[in-house]
Length: 365
Image (cartoon, rainbow, N blue to C red; front, side, top):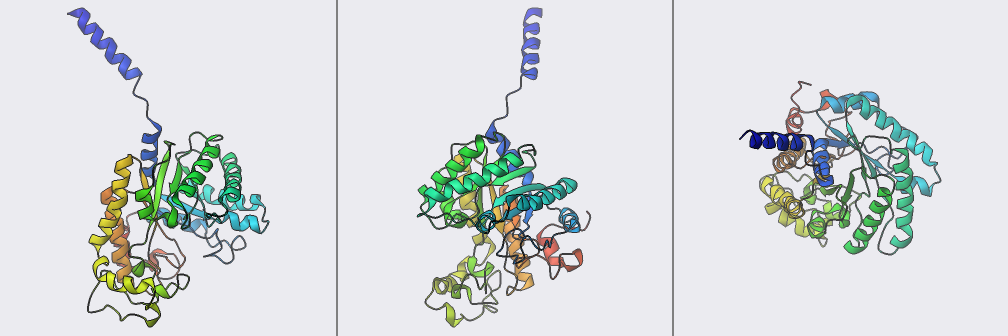
């Protein structure tokens, strides 16, 4: 009997001193959850900041505010291709990234460095992919010493409407190149057609184990992008409420007739509600379960020029609540540009009560 007990004790000691190793995929799941709720800072790309690199609209007080509001992570879109085309020294760009990283360290925020607005498409991927790889190799070598628990790399923002196979091959090659330098960094990869939830639901996972898969969620687009001039006439109808309300639903803008926005105008009666938000998010949640991989909602939000404040609050709360229920971290687009959650400059006083509720801010931090 004593011999049997001794064997049990020895086995227990061995098991305790030799725990089951954590797999790379488990690491990716854990790191994905650590991103929590985040927000994008869109000042290092030219579309939303016309004075990119010459004017820095983000101050240390902004990072303090982001922390105070309860955000856990910052996504930093960087227009690398834009800078490269204009012969802007990469060191100048890195200086700005370094400053953001410094502030994230001070305030305990995770940082996602995002390759934003590239030129990749079906016709140029053979020559364009190596350019993207070269940029990532510079980034990877520069930040190799940064903790992979705190700094994430997002390979490519919104791959366009291109062949899913071509994009997957390009993504595989970029991942492989980074892995030759950095074995431990968690990478973030989305699907083609602008990080579409539908393309992601059809995508096969990559062979690499340490990847978080991202998607962008602006459904229903007819509401979130109402009046957005860069989209076109399809979203010219403004004053669209969320959820759909027959009494306050505006008449269709004549510019919309004959575009895909016309169908969306009538479809919104079915899509403009929280249940529809839930059902569409469930599509990517099911895909995540199918492949047993972590996912991230890399962008969600509402263009704030025409959508009424209460509708914006209700929509953001609906998305955020469903992401929380499904265990999916989410990054708001964005901090203080035209999708901002603030009514005016970024400040607590410019955050409405309904928006505080939408982002779970209770004023205690």
